[in-house]
Length: 295
Image (tube, rainbow, N blue to C red; front, side, top):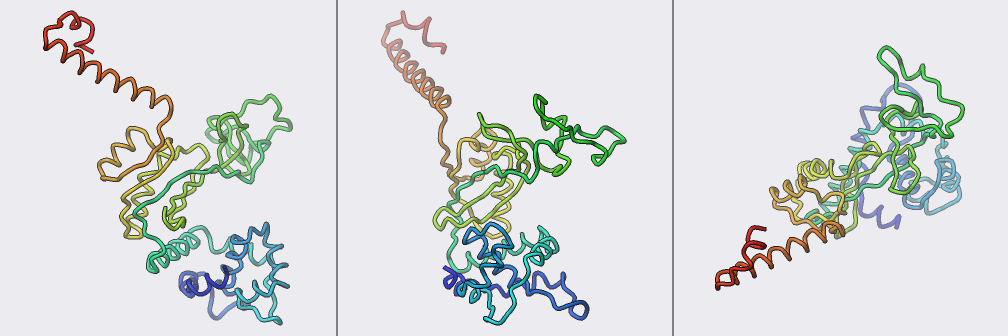
């Protein structure tokens, strides 16, 4: 896998995107940003749990060393340096690099983008329910709030409480499961190649359908693609979205809930019944008229 990636993807653009974050004539020699991203590709591709574990495995794994362009005598970066680089680069830089990789995939005909799938996933935040405090009132600050010692039997909600540890996270969870502090990741995937072409993070309570049209617009404008068909779950298929999709002439594949299916079946039966009774009435069977003709 590493050989295929190394052959297909030229990562030299990373230096250009990160050059404004480095000083050319001051400070100690830095870790090459390309090396940093090669290490993180290994972490994600092979499911390595931590920066520390990744650096330890690169020490003795010759395939990893080859992919990182490290000779046997070269020193592997310390795991603490990876954390500092990640914070220094920031979310915006990661986003630019992600977009550039997608553009490379499009240029190499790996991504078509005409047919996509969209879904949202809840991701647990790095914060505990114990960190929930009352939302600060006017004139108060979040830092002044003291988390309770015990949370048993305490009612928690996003309206009146907020996490002191991670204020941007919200209580969320699937129906029937305990709520947890979380975010929601909205992914759009090219249906043919299964490559993620867009990812967007919101609070855990954000509805998938609310961000659907904005993500479609972002993909089409950012990558010059034309989405023709969308596959998603029924959480996306409500009136406002359906009207917008029809306006954009997008073909949609949404599953129908049992409740909606029953409504459609009743409507079909009523239409057929009305058509049949109207036909009978036209032939002179007027005793049907008072009951059925005005449904």
